[in-house]
Image 1 (cartoon, rainbow, N blue to C red):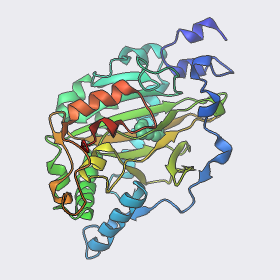
Image 2 (image 1 turned 90 degrees about the vertical axis):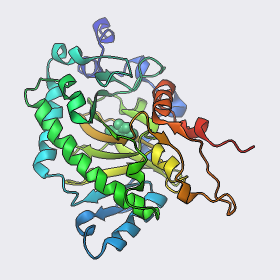
Image 3 (image 1 turned 120 degrees about the horizontal axis):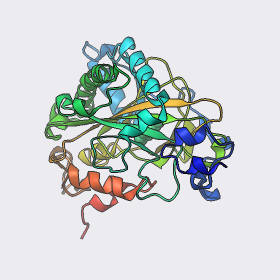
Length: 351
Ligand code: OGA
Ligand code: NI
């Protein structure tokens, strides 16, 4: 391999120069994607139609939420209210961002996980041993006026397009939070009220084509640390979810989002709803873009199991201690992606 490829910051710029995966991306044999054992999702992933959420069938839809959140922890939604144009523009601008010359992209590069706007690669290059075949632009996007000045100004419509998308997805998330709250038997503003001033982050994930996809990951198995994630993906498959001991490929369906439960919802629901293990694999001939919105508490919010769901006498004790989201968030990044839950150190003491 050309020595110059190794000195590149971003995997996009390495991918275009190699015909083998460089050694620092190669997983140990015990930790490879085993692509031949992956199942195809077929119809097994719940699809919730939000059309009727505000009509006479609300109770039925809420029931679908409780089923999807408790038995799967992830599901698809349609008729979600985010305009098709807004979605198309967002995917296009993300693609244009990553197709810019290296010199333009690296202006935003930082390995500092505390920075609120940054382009990086893999997950946390400061702590991990094996790298992942992914570059990502991470943005904070609520309140939008606090962050929009930091966002890239190239491509020229980046800020406007991304702001429109983030605002529209936030409105959707607030609707989802009410439905999820009700599905737990809680008041509909209960989950929202535990999040302090609320937070919203986005990642623009770019997975370049990979010469040997069986040796590496776009993202290895992990659980999202935030409250819920709303994932937009382009038309290229790559997402896989772990269910009943198997990895299942979740193929993109036009005009739907994937929603998954994250660690904070697991805590608030006191394990009624669990954060789900998922990963992204890469492929040899197509680049892939995915855009997760990570909805989260604000850093000062105190997170713990909802009191209404706890009953010490009836064998329903609080399973987690209370903590600030800032405390959790720091641990999440420091530890690196791992299949073990980051929540282990936030469990209530049993003595
Ligand atoms: C993530 C993630 C999945 C994907 O960014 O946390 O799980 O399909 N992404 O890119
Ligand atoms: Ni994830």
